[in-house]
Length: 554
Image 1: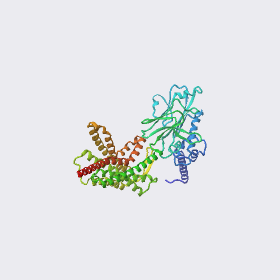
Image 2 (image 1 turned 120 degrees about the vertical axis):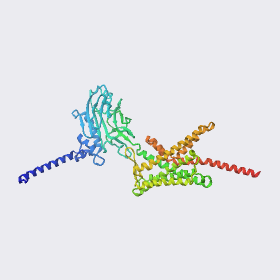
Image 3 (image 1 turned 60 degrees about the vertical axis):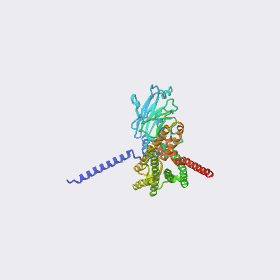
Image 4 (image 1 turned 180 degrees about the horizontal axis):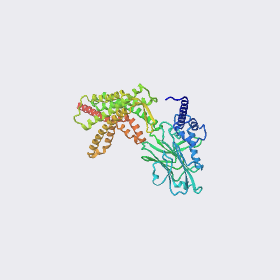
């Protein structure tokens, strides 16, 4: 069909009009996009434009992310503190503020109420009054009746303002306690503001209760309030608040009213990490010296005492000592390097550290195996080239594991993080989590469980035999305890303390200290084990010499 010239011009105007309308709609949609801040809103958030609206100030929680340098967190923090005070004074204020990041409500409450007041503080809805069974809502605020009674007789009713704010991922309402490495973080990025009347309320006889629901947390939670004194940057502080942490919720009880939040406290903060590193370096350095003493003592005895050339137990102890020397030395060098290497050099460092660690685990397993042959099996234990075969396992098996791990490209820069996803330590290690779990965690668990079973059997045998004897043998129980403690150092008992670290900071310090001193315990056990027998041997030789001298005189 052919169009006449007039019809073509009319159709062209319609098309241009429709295209223009679509472009206008697209422009408006972009302006209304909640994730996109206009230049004017950025000026509000930076403080260049004073007195923004609630809508503009609420959008700052979205637009002021960590990559927006123009935003001024203190401006927005002061705005919302002041806004709650204004809402308590202004009678004409709207009763509800419902934005994507801010949910607020205003209630006129009589001071003659006969029971406590409950409000919901769900992050997805405007706070509402709770009645009856609703007072057990997972997220709620309880205002005690005594609070309103204290306002009599100066007033008959009072305004109660509650605000639930999603502060987002930016710096607003984060404070100095949450803006650093190894620091705390606001749980769920949710804060709750409470304002009753126009005057500050503090030193309550009966505290206000704020209940936050959450998933089960392994870390410690702490109730805090926002301290925004004029002239100084605001910060979260726990003064006047108590914390009752339960499985899926935490109850905060505070003796004043302001903004409140729940901080997720990391187990390892900056000071704790530094302290643990110092303990590790000092302990490993001390162990290194004592392990070198142990090795030197063995070789000196080997050249002077015939029994040290034939017995396998001292050789196994020294092999474990050598592996610990190499591990401690490598660990001190890597830990002392503040900036980890990159590329092939970092992969090599990770492989070397992994190899010496596995050598230690393997030789601790060999200690347990030899202990089993000596104390449990006893008979028919002759194995040709016994120590040579143990060396092939002790030094060869870890090499094979490291070779396979390295062929998969698993070594590199590894960041150790806490439950709040903060980096606590960065070093050249194993990047691949599967390789880490299999070749370190799994390897350790197998050797530790085997050593634990053997140690348990030996302990039962020691105390069962002592318990079956009467008289003075029963008074020597302490010797059995010392024996078990010495054997536990050989089979990796100090390493087993790592299983207790989820308990808390005390267990972490105990593991770090005792495990780093394993070399000291090894030297002590070596001295206790062999020096008494050397004295007996020396006494026996002296007696034989004296006997032969007296016989020659006769």
